[in-house]
Length: 283
Ligand code: PMP
Image 1 (cartoon, protein in one colour):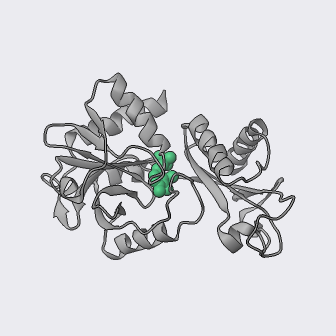
Image 2: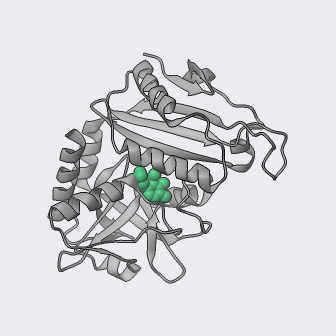
C-alpha cells in the first residue's frame, strides 16, 4: 500500500505531497503540530491532543484550518488510506501561504497537513526491554515551550548531540540546574524511597499527553508522586529514570551521561508503569 498524505483538502501520494515555498511554516516556523499514537485502530489520548492543538493555535492567534469534528474524520480517513492500525498520525497547522513578511498576513488561511505511518510494536518492546541511555544538555529554547510549535531547532540539536554520543535522548537542563524535559519527551525520576517526580506543567515544558494520562493512572493506583523540578544531581542518584511520550509510551532509562542508573537495567517500577500504560491503551 503506497503512502498517502492529506494536504489542504486533498489526499495525495506521499512522494508528491508539497506546500508552497511561501508557506509560513517553511519561512518562519509559524506553525504547530501534534503526534497521536494509534493502537489497534484507536487514537490514544485523542481529546487531549486536539485540545492541545487548539490551545497552541489560540496562543499563536492562528485560525483553525477546519472545525474539530471534520478534522477527526480526516484523521480517520488518513489512517484508513494508509492502512495504519498501529502507528502514529502527524498533524501540522501553519499560518498559511503569504508573501514573506513578519507580521501576520491579513486574512491568513491556515494550512493543514497530515501523514500517518506504521510503527513496529516488536521493535518498541525490544527497546523498552533493554532500556535506553540519555545525556544532559543545556536547555537553549525560547520561553513558551508549552506551545507545540514546529520551531524545533534546539530540540533537533539536543537530539543530534545524543545520537552522536550514542544515546537515545537528551534531557535539557535549565539555568538553575533543573531538568526541564527531553528533546521530544517528558522526564521522570523515581527517588530512592520510591517517589515519582516530574516537573509541573507551565511555560517551561510541553504538557505531555502521555505524562498527563500516566499521572491519572498513578493517582488511581495510589503511587506517591511529587510534581516539582528535579536537579541533574537527583537524576544521577535516582533509583530509576524513565521518559514518556506518544511514540515511546513509558520508556526505562538505564544510563545517564555514561553512568548506569541503578544496576544498569530497566527498573521494576518503570517496567510496571509501562505495563500499566499499555493496559490503559489497550482498553
Ligand atoms: N516534550 C516535548 C518537547 C515533546 O516534543 C513531546 C512530544 N510531543 C513531549 C514532551 C511528550 O508529549 P506527548 O506525551 O504528548 O507526546
